[in-house]
Length: 346
Image (cartoon, rainbow, N blue to C red; front, side):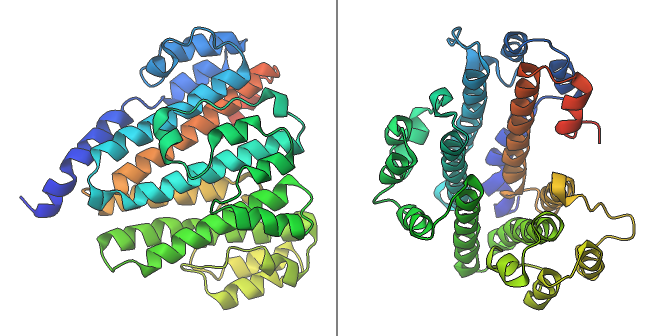
């Protein structure tokens, strides 16, 4: 038996077993039909994937608590796979955990800019508490944006927030974009500097595709909604590229209108024909491309980190959908509209 098969067989087998706990389309549809948040929580308590995470938490009853617990299930799955992996398999986990930190910071920032700080719920297990590079207790106690920034002093995020503060950043979007750019730039640079191997090829494909499409979506939105100049658009892009060439990006950022942008987009390697989905405002194209990348990599490298990365991505998408469903139920959004929001009807 080849060494690679032996090396990854245990981790891949465990991942496949965990994949069996992901909710089906039918279960998501049934969940979206429920009339109250409490009934949705009770439904999740009876599922294979979420029964354990709610065990012993009978007090959970409102939306904020439920969403925090659901998110915690992602961290627990990550921990299970991380602990099962050996030292040579853990590099991609570091990149994923880095993103979890960034996502947590972005979620916390929403409370300050959207005046919802009093509803903040952060349920973190011991694993996350031990490995995060900042104090979770500090984030929980921060009552103002200034206190939040002070809780990050001495961490790798300090410089970003100091730059944002001194640069006059005003809204959540400014902070979220800066964190995303920092994340993808740092990770992609680290991947490119790593030794050439099957792992590097896999990670370049996964992260490079995401970077290209995030930049494409931002150019699209900037032209369609924000009427920004070429210099403003280009300065907001992630300064990296995989299949896109810098000259292609410059041409697209300089498009006079949406029609010209789409013509230039059609000349790139990501255009799949006249029927290509170009719905970048709702991230449909991005999701399809990223999902397709994970599926293709898993088929190409079945005994590698590819199936593990694919599972964690699918779990993240499930968490996003559950959060949207629970929020929709809370605000009495019709079930059909909820399913449209989570792209279940596509």
